[in-house]
Amino acid sequence: MDIDTGRSSKEIVVNHDCLGLAYQSEQLFVTSGQALYVYKMDGQLVRKLFEDTTAQLTVSRCAVSNDADMIFITDKAHNRLVTLDNQGNILATLTDVDDVMRKPEGVHVTSQGHVFVVCTGSQTVLQISHDGKSRVQTMARNPPGISRPNCVIYHRMTQSLLVGGSDLEITELGLDHF
Image (cartoon, rainbow, N blue to C red; front, side):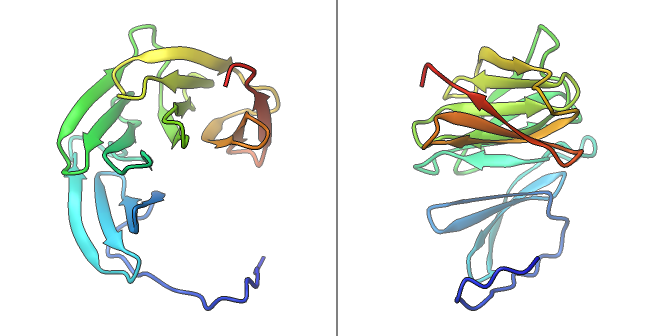
């Protein structure tokens, strides 16, 4: 489907895979499966911010805090969430001792700083602390209507999480406490 927004289209060509995108502070963050790259919107590569070549899908998806000071990366290969500063230094590595964080894929940071991770392997949606160091709570297990959850976003107007699955489903989870 093509959508005409009345604006001219722009193409950015990269020389690596593109598994995930995040945009913050006039920068485009692109995950390739093993690395995180930062681009300007004109397509100019700023730098490779982070790389982990110990396995495939160590840098699956990413989300960036509002001030662009923290970047959250899902590492499906090692079942963990890696938190970086904006220089690429690791601030935290979260693995879940309860075995709930299996195959973390989608990650989202709200404008209020809440971090959500959706895990395909355990069929869960988790809330993570703002610093990426601990799990705050499990928001949902086996979200209704979703067979393999793989992406999540917070909808500010309805105060709910939208969770997408790999079988073309999207479900809305209400959040009364936000």
